[in-house]
Amino acid sequence: MQMKYLYLLGYPLGHSISPALQNAALRARDIRATRYMKSPTPPEKLSEMVKVLRGENCLGANVTVPHKQTILPHLDELTELAREIGAVNTILKQDGKLIGDNTDAYGFLQALRVRRINPQGACVSILGAGGAAAAAAYALAQAGVDEIILLNRTLARGIALADRLNKKFPQLALAINDWDALAQSQLIINATSVGMSPRVDESPAPKNFSFPKHAIVFDLVYNPPATKFLRDAKQNGARVIGGLEMLIYQGARAFELWTGARAPIRVMRNAATAALQELLKSDAPR
Image (tube, rainbow, N blue to C red; front, side):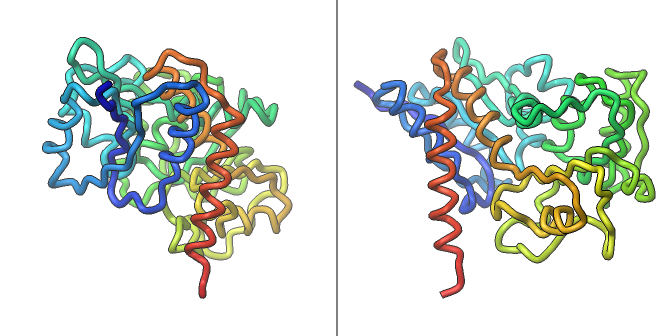
């Protein structure tokens, strides 16, 4: 039986625990001769990696930073969801074609649902305007939030994301780089990589910012589990959510799309948690 592969495209990939949770899921569902593996892909090698994805032994792929948007022109088709979000994190193989999809939006919203958080009617601030921010914004707009404030160091990217959201959700109130609104937001999301290991002492929040006690603060970074962004929010009394749950649920949705099998959520969570703990040990000062 020929070995089949699922790939993770990104650069760098030293922090990723996706192989641990996906390979655990494959074993749990007795899907043999299939392996999920990292494929560190610098931007200049993306075209070459796409050729690998077209090979017969490839079943599909995940895509992470910095390729969630730059991968788009390399694909044959996009699902409606991926096209509207403007970012791809999952690639499916169908009749020899590479189909770009997005499971980040599902994973983000599911991480809220399992905590019985309903964002309908909320005012939301999102730090970032890349692929993860776009997925979160799209999911929240579908869930019926009243307003989204996009906060991004590059104004043009914030405007581009706001334009895409406005076309799909004309009733949604949108603002760009209104930092004063941060203190009034009910939900505050870090969708940047700031604070990710090894830069654990950094935060995307403004210096000396006091997180509102009433807010839910969600950091999409999962390594470390308690970022400075979350530590500061918790110290001010806010409710905090780390990025591990979103990682698990977006991965579970991708697993189901690739295999047609039901994702073993508990197995994936246990494997992800164990892999993250091992990663934290290896990163600890010696």
